[in-house]
Image 1 (tube, rainbow, N blue to C red):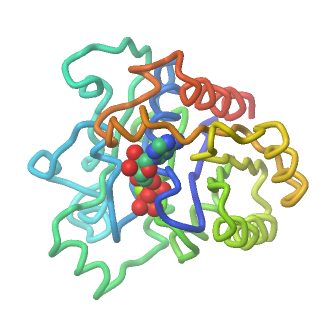
Image 2 (image 1 turned 90 degrees about the horizontal axis):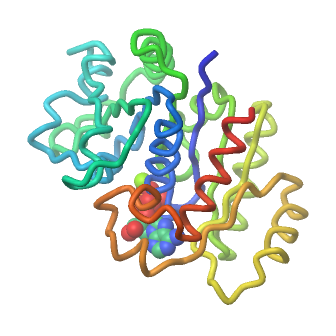
Length: 256
Ligand SMILES: Nc1ncnc2c1ncn2[C@@H]1O[C@H](COP(=O)(O)OP(=O)(O)OP(=O)(O)O)[C@@H](O)[C@H]1O
Ligand SMILES: [Mg+2]
């Protein structure tokens, strides 16, 4: 049985795309076939972490939604691209369905919208055609129709928050929605925590506030920022605390 994992946050810039790409890479490293779909149609970005540029993305999720191709035709094997020339051993494979970065495509979606139901059909087809063990969905921040759909069909929902009062409030809304939609496994991930914080106390505080498990706390890291989303951090620096926390998240996902 394949598992669908949605990675969400109420506010933007929390680290969804970086964490999605790192989680996908670690799961694939363990020997799994992993699909990654960028459902952030308004402001796509995860393709950058897998080293894809605009010219190479001849097909995208947009083309599937506009009935120009099947979803598997918009899926690119990206495992071998990771590492900018350096090879990181990977026993499985990662297939990325990018969202279009072309201005005309983005404005067309904003103007015309699309049938959100097609996303669900697309996820199922992708899992079936590419024989995926895991499907990771990187989302647009906040609550919208795509997010509600991805939350509703997830086996695991990961909600990312920073230790910030704005994030705390927004996360409460998302957790509430996830409960109403009866997501079977809800995990919170705290990202960009100052290293001077007491991580154990922070974990306890957040778990009590939301009555949900905190899967990991990832430090605010100059090393992560310095990579500028140009590579998969946890493959390049496996011993770093950020990478260890990514593996903690992966262990929980694989145990579901
Ligand atoms: N733990 C961290 N320490 C330092 N910088 C980080 C950390 N995690 C992510 N970043 C940086 O934060 C920025 C935003 O990350 P990312 O694009 O993954 O967030 P996002 O939630 O996908 O954003 P958006 O909501 O715009 O899609 C990037 O520049 C990334 O390098
Ligand atoms: Mg993102």
